Image 1 (cartoon, rainbow, N blue to C red):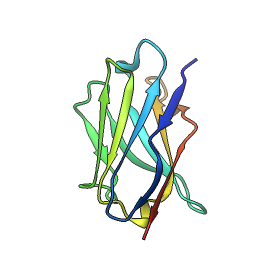
Image 2 (cartoon, helix red, strand yellow):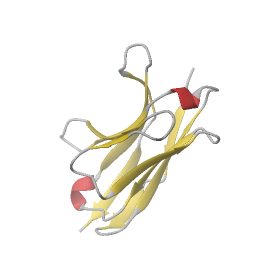
Image 3 (spheres, rainbow, N blue to C red):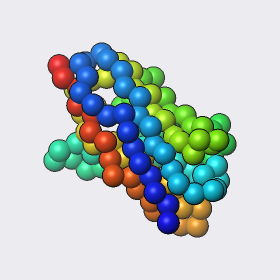
Amino acid sequence: QVQLVESGGGLVQAGGSLRLSCAASGRTFSSYKMGWFRQAPGKERELVATIGGSGISTYYADSVKGRFTISRDNAKNTVYLQMNSLKPDDTAVYYCARRSRVTTSYDYWGQGTQVTVSS
């Protein structure tokens, strides 16, 4: 069973920065694409960023491109989301997730960490 544990959320003023971390259990972390998602109150969950197993390939939603950076440390089984120039619209619960190599859907999810950006 894979466990994903996020940390690093909190309250920050607009323009500030936060770094989220997601620690994963398991011995094959580097084999899996990882993603960060977020869900704001009353809104659907949206994909924020993804990173391939080697850390080379990345994807960003247009809403965060140029402000957020996804990275991973496979030696530590951890994926990060560096968030800069935060806006109130970035307020949401942020989740990390692991993508299945079989179905290509995200099959393991963390519990989420709250990010609140005040104006």
